[in-house]
Length: 455
Image (cartoon, rainbow, N blue to C red; front, side, top):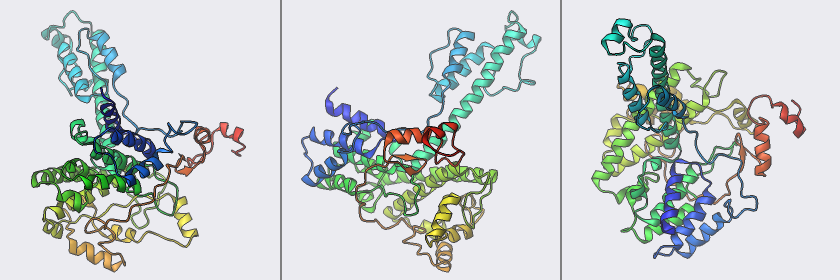
């Protein structure tokens, strides 16, 4: 494997992880240095500035923060037990739902159990049923043991599918469809791969505990890398770029088939996320008037899903505009979904002279998006514009009726070491504080006494 191929593999693997942008910049610099198309001086300076903070360049070479998003716990233990009770089952990966399901079905055939028929009272075979199925020599105890295992495996499979769905929603809410790019699509052009990987890493940064706004993903390094794509537009894989950066310029390089494909993906995703939002809402209705977290609210699930809705909605609007199909928005313009705000952050806003975000009143008055997509409520663009005007919100600049206008690239800022959103200067200290439970919103654990924290 050549050095460039190795780097491309590493960059591609980062698309569904949480690698630091500095480390991706270091890889991007190595990648571009190994190509015929050498980067411009501006690009090199920007990458070198960012790469100087990579873990490889730092003396400690360590970060206390996880470099991956939470992954579902697979069915490895259950498959191992199934191999004992059902000898000869084909090997299967516990992280692959399709392989887990195939193993369950294959094992079920051994005891005449249909997939999904797992009720312990009505679906088990009695003595006569076992004899008819050719299991007359298997004792009731041995049969029950196998039936119970397959029942547990089906429940485990359902949990894996739910957790995988949650993970995909989290990824899409942060960085769009980058995680879905196949390696061949991603690696077709080196500058494209460098841009997509770096912007994805920037988009995947954790939220900070602040009232001054989160970091914007598109910074001066991303802008320099995008300049490389403009230099050689005929070599750039614009379709891959559109997965993370659907500007009018990028979408203008796509053909109708590519735009239509992305439009379909995002609309299906909108439907899926709307269903998840409704489920979360029915489980625990929120205070739409303030969107401040109350006891019992699952803010993590809601905020991850709301981010995914906002990202999908932005991409969908951008594609409709690129396809000259904005008349659809005249009839169907589901609103944004606001994030839940922690009570302490809300109090911090008030103490600095701020208040509720102006979008809050608009969100509270518009019909919920799941009702709009099901056709139970009407939400045309005219209604959104009327509600925005009533509450003093610019529907265009606020992103209510079309994607927000592009902002100037943000200055590059080193990735902060965070403990529950609070910046800590030293990664080793950050690890200790996290272990002690500091800044978690819960009472510190006893280990915090060693840090001089009063529990």
